[in-house]
Image (cartoon, rainbow, N blue to C red; front, side, top):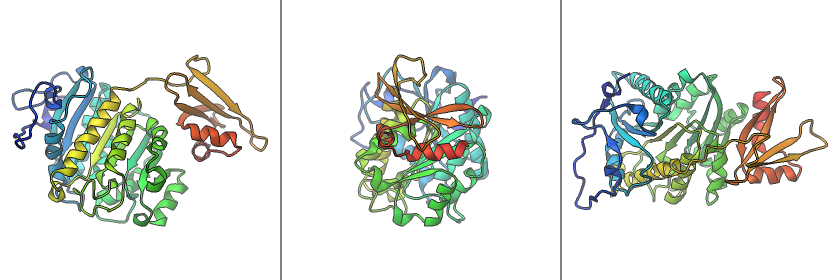
Length: 381
């Protein structure tokens, strides 16, 4: 597959007088697909950055200009980790219809997955998550999806960016889904009930504000993360149609992005819905660039570890409950102090291991079954 056929090269104009020059800036420390420099062997890279200027299935008109606006700001930041080889592929060429763009996105992500390259996508509207999900088709494995959004996009709406989850929820390849940061007054009870019916989950904004570490275990198990910049409060990010006065603070969303970067399972990370038409002093473009910076920073700090019964890097804890048929088994990494727990798959006579937090372990010690354990147990049994 020749990726050069899928992408328009990067052509950036010096944005302003404050443009940082020198060899230490991000823009000087990655390979860039330009009119004079084509995409070479993709397996040479660990991470591929690219824009998707697509908005035709969204009411948030103007997001097609976000990739270059964000890229301008990202290139001005200082370099992250010189050991992480990064390529900017450019902007994906739009198809004749937005559906064609989904298929193009599918092809590109599929190729990157085959070559073990992590995708960082700058949208565009969030319905592009459908195309990202399609990229996992050839893996033959179930997909864990996490969205960071102020709403649950299951609405009966002609706009795909408001309803794209309805399609994904009908796909059998979707194993788990979690939303982070929904705002109760922006989210219908029907949508929350649909989440619960499928044993999926959503964290209220208030439950993770100032305690973003609660999101780390969920992100650690994710394969695909889709972030709506509208999850950030308007004061910190004005560049979105119908931005909310409430939401995550800038530092909180960057911390969440770093947690996503440290997950060794996440292979696709997308940032969507930034609209330069409503941006004030490039505030949202700057924040979006810093979100991507934090994801890449986390990527450079990944710890490839997974608990096994005979692995001396892990400590095993077994909690028995008189009123439970199954023991609750937890693992703690002695290197990183991260936690996992076992979920029994009764029919298959085996257990699966998922990420969790120390709070889940403490809850089990108090003879209370963690919500995450119970939901996954019901789902697989």
